Length: 175
Ligand code: SF4
Ligand code: SF4
Figure 1 (cartoon, rainbow, N blue to C red):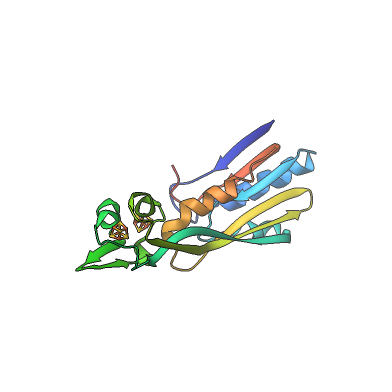
Figure 2 (cartoon, rainbow, N blue to C red):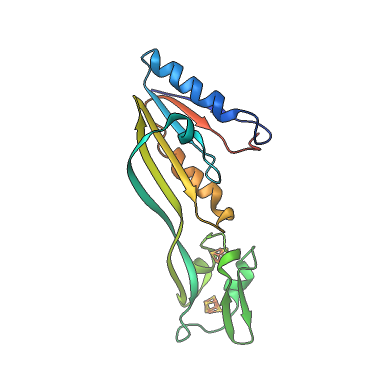
């Protein structure tokens, strides 16, 4: 069985992490099985309070379009039409991909009739796992300029919700 307690606030700097870390410590001292998940991937700071020992670090990557195979592309423009983020465009006969606008939704790959979209792994951050005393600790760090990928990385942290009491230190502005 697992219990989830999310600590959130409308803005940053309100003492959210202070509250979350203290709840985690108090519950652990009472003998509860506690997991601390820092979901503030843009500026995590729970580790500054709990000082976990990090045992494992893993890159988080998403398969993302980087260009097109010109031999396969028939310049139909379907990829550009389906993209809600203007991250892929057909200019004259050429397809251009703007990585910084891409939200890695996969739609261009799905609609392409000739399988011409080339994808590569794109690193959006790192996940770190460790322990602070008996408290299992999970947090992530978003790569610079990957702000749009923040929800994907938060989900990766949340994937570590498990048995016991899960304390989720939410991102500022989470309602
Ligand atoms: S993956 Fe989605 S957001 Fe990125 S270029 Fe393709 S359609 Fe646009
Ligand atoms: S959908 Fe495929 S074939 Fe059509 S323009 Fe885009 S990459 Fe080329």
